[in-house]
Image (cartoon, rainbow, N blue to C red):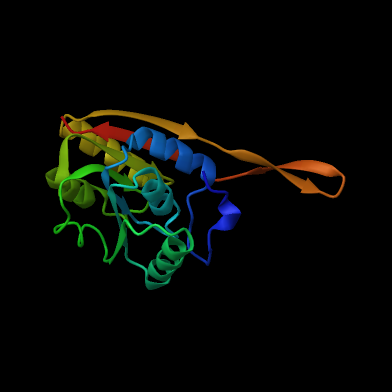
Length: 186
């Protein structure tokens, strides 16, 4: 997995390495998987997924122009030609995707139910959705959707705390807690 510091960053949120590891483990990508990264931010998950799926295809869907540019730069930096960037606000941009093995939602812009509706038509049977939620509203919306539509799901919250060296001391530095919600289309 790639160290956070190696990604080109801006003022765009980035999924941290530890959360990327858990997210991709839950997505269960194969070498030829077709995956969409919704709310792709800097493209950190997109790039990691592309490296794990060299014979697959990764779609990075992002609404913010600055983030789209960062994704493009990170895709170039890490030489992952199997990525297609889509500049749109989800669920727009999902309609022309092929059948998907997995979908990762890192940002929903408050539209989690509409995004999940669109993804439900694109996911293959057995396909997985992984939602990384930092707000209660996104977590609740995703869980309610999966219950209502009778999807198998699980969820856990992760809180990462790193050590930061400050002179002669090691200080703890907490990152935002993240709910990782995984569901499988039956």
